[in-house]
Image (cartoon, rainbow, N blue to C red; front, side, top):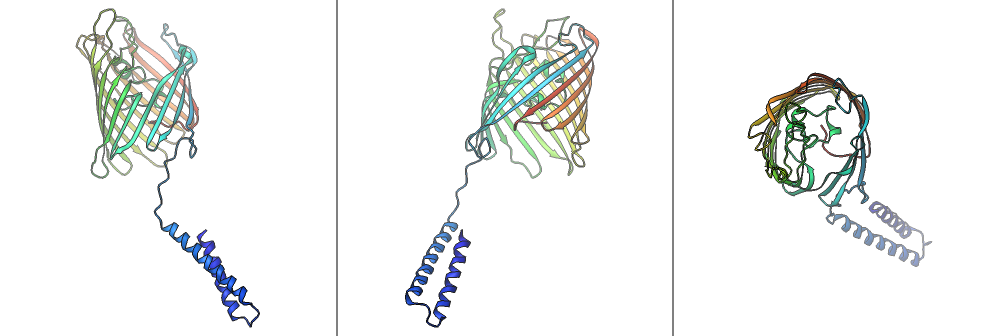
Amino acid sequence: MLMKYVFALVAGLFALAGASQADGNSSPSEIDALKARVTELEQKLEKLEQQESAPQTESPPETGGRYLALPDISLIVQARGKATTDKIDPDKQKIQLAEAELGIQGYVYPNVRADAFFAGSPAEHEPFHVHEAYLSYLGPAKGLNFVVGQRFVPFGRVNQLHNHSWLYARQPLVLSNLVAPESLAGQGINLTYLIPTSPGLFAQLDLGSWANGSEGEESNFPPNIMAGPGADLTDRFTTARFWMGIPTSENGEFELGGSWAGGRSEEDPDTGLTNYVHLRGLDLTYRYFGPQTSRLLLRAEHLWRKGTTDSDGAVARGYYLFANYRWNRYFDAGLLYDWSQFPQDTSRHESAISLVLTRQFSEQYYVRLQLTRGSRPDDDSYTEVRLQWCWGVGPHTHSLE
């Protein structure tokens, strides 16, 4: 727009000069009209220059639905199949629709983001329910964010990942036995502070206060133990996590994290007792990014759980070791070894080793095969083959591995 008036002004000046040098063919009225036009263009040009020199206000942040005030809506679906030598497993030799997850996300105010995820499991006749629903306040102070609502709490390295973001088809045994069958969730508030450090070093602290935690899937007591009770933090509990990242080379990084959770369960209606539980965890991760899209991931996590009623004050522990190599954008392979005691009887444990192969067809579709050989109190030696299909549509945006 500014250049348009500049060119018009220059053209007017040339016309005026030509008229003044003409041999009398231009009348005084025509010359006066040209002068008026030049004066008008000069005024418009001056006004445009003033507008351009004025400070520009920042545009509001982009909301959901790109520039429209619409949320981002997405759907992730999983089908799972399992073949096993365990004759009493109700899911053996079946392919079922394991889960469908609907995500609705967007900004409700500058620097305030809303996320809600609803999940249902047709295979378990489980209707859609709130998986997570929370508001994220981004940057109210330098380095500080906080979240309020229901979400997977920051405990351990992978608790906040949804199961379709895992790099394996079955959760490590220690996490399902001592923490939660999928993820430990709660309703409350969490503060995240990015700690100032030297260049190249990352450090973050999370502190949370929660209620109504996830219930476990505790099985019968000995000798028929199949699963631990999880954290059993079904009433009020608090969490704390510190983790840091250190670059080891131009393409490598090392992460170290420590987690703690403590609280109580709801009162048992039969015994009138309340279970007070403390969880501790330590995790180590190493990543190396090779040529193009290749990546090596090494991870270890060790957990300790102490409860006052279900384990009579004994400490149950467990760990897993995981290695994953992605040699291109379409294929990766992993090896998982996990070992876990049972809080109900710490003299008993289960263990397994698994080979995991994944074919990533696109960012929205993958197929995974997991072969497992393991032992547990009710079966000294079992073999499982798991298949997982996962597909989705829409901009599903939350933590990935």
